[in-house]
Length: 258
Length: 319
Image (cartoon, rainbow over all chains, first blue to last red; front, side):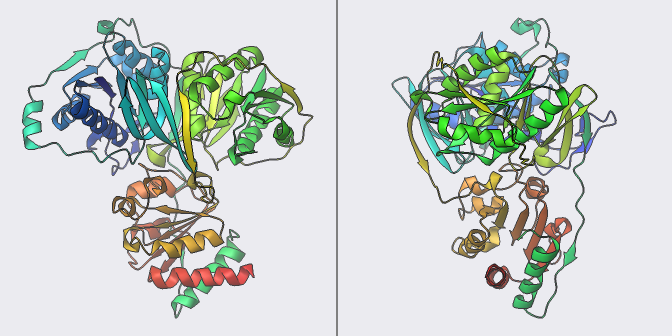
């Protein structure tokens, strides 16, 4: 089983995100960079499948040079090799542009299965994985919490509003991860040592046969902070019951939400 | 020029986000001075289709086939692509539900369309359509301008208002071309009693301090308010609640009318995921808890005493 995992390096979720001087880019100085949590589920699932069925796990990412660190972490978890598409032109890409680049790289790679995070927790776009599948003309299944592969077919349980749906498809396929799929392992000291010797192949757009990154179809014209909430009133009272009564009265008569 | 709104039906009715998408579509169509066409896919959906006229559909297209009974990405994408090719809309609006997120990504890639995913509002700046969407789990908001001949807006549930504006809404059946399909339906398990977090008007959420057994008091209050129960990441990590209940940057981002945080300290990831709620109540025994800085109403005290007392008070006003 040849498995490719699509991975994005993102600011750690505990980071405060600022707005850059240009007003359209996020300020991410001094943040800690991590593997996007949903991509981490993808890495873990790929390694588990490999451990059971054999094969190899390749990590594919498009981004800045420093994304190699995130790939290295995935290699330390147990993936075999990495491919990083890095090119100044990538910076101006929207989600669809990134998907085109990843699909372009995948065209010269072999895969039975591609696993991607449902979204990256920076731009929250929910787009790239599924769009890559479309560009490769293979099926996709999103928000997967459980999968089973047998006889060149995959059966996936995916979450939907209020429940789960199980679907099946022949391989090759791309699926995206949902929380609950697995509990990602920590890289062991031995894994970290081994990862130092594993290859990360850095490629430019030209190397994957793309002349440029194309024109983005969506453009961020302004970033703003959400309306800042201020601390409201503290409901006081002699007893729990008195506080509860005052709160419910406020919610009913003042805020009118119950 | 036409605006196309995709309706999402489930269990014999339309999801609330359908009416939100239609209402948003109506605003865009009015600005452009064009028709709003609604599209419904499913099996046996013709009877309910006329319902869409109430929210501003000038025309309602129904793709009805037994094979469309269950949502499957490739058949639905194929049928929608076919119909979009015939209708030639300039803007497509749909809900960013699980289904909407899935299919809008496919459609954008197939049709080379500008997709604004999970946006919370849309407006015009002169000729330019601009949609606002949260990023970083809601820590910042981006105004995004989609360009090109086809723009797709996937609207976050519970964000855009539902506005009734009755139109003629003639229902028309369209031919269904399923095309090549790979994904097949096996089974589904639905919890009909459970209110979906992202669509709930009220969420009663609990933290790690609740303990597994004690979520019952939150469930009781949530049920009384016709709401849903949410949880912090640590409550989920400790196995008190299923993953699908997690609110926060790496879980679900929610914006109910009322969010009641019980025993939740307020980690930045959790705050990002619920700060767009209209009214926030925080209940915590630690007066220094970060959650109080975001709450409209704070109550310092023991959750196990306060929540049952609140439930009793709500019962009183509900008679």
